[in-house]
Length: 214
Image 1: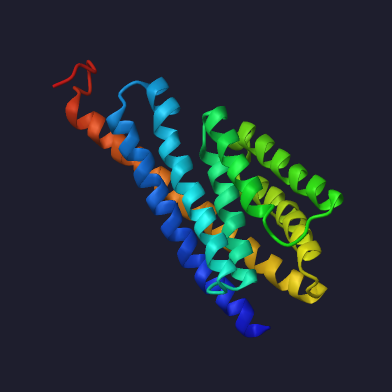
Image 2: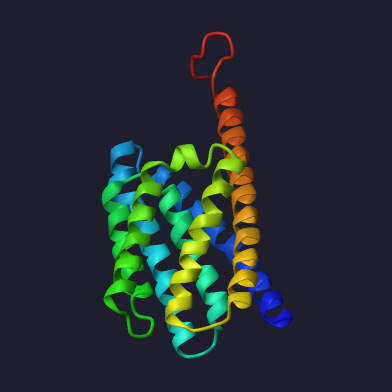
C-alpha cells in the first residue's frame, strides 16, 4: 500500500506540473496567433481540447495495456478533467471535452444503469464547474472545499468499477487532494507571473503618464 501511495503521488505530481505547463504554453500561443478574443475562443480553445483529450485517451490506453496502474491513472485523469473544465472559457469547447471524458471514463468495466447515471452526474458537476470557475479558483479554501467532495465522488464511482478496499480509497483520495493542492498553487503561480510579465511589457511599450504607445 505504501508503494502504491508513493507511486501515485510521485507520478501524479510530475504529470500535473507537466500537463499544466504545456497547457499554458498552448493557451499563450493561441492568444498570440489570434488577435481577436472571439477567434481565440472559437479556434484557440479547440487546440486545448485536442491536447486534453489526447492526454485522457493516452492514459486510458496505457492503463489498458497495464503500463500504468489503476490508482495512478484515476488520479491523472481526474486532474486533467477538473483543470481543463476550470480553464476552458468556451461552452462548446467544454462540452466537446466532456463528451471525450464520458467516452474514456465510460470504457471501464461493465457499467450498470446506476453507474452510468453516476458518471453522467459527474460530468454535470464538471459542466457547472466550468460555469463557476472564476468563483471556485478565487480562494484556495473555496477550491479545496470543492475538491474534497468531488474527489470523493469520483473515487466512489471507481470503487464501483473495481472492488478495492475502503482503506485504498482513503489513501488514494488523500493523494488526490495533495496533488490538487499543488495544481492550484502552481497554476496560480503561472497566472501571476503571466500577469506581471504582461504588465511589464505594457509599461515598456507605453508612456507612463499619457498611456500612448512608444
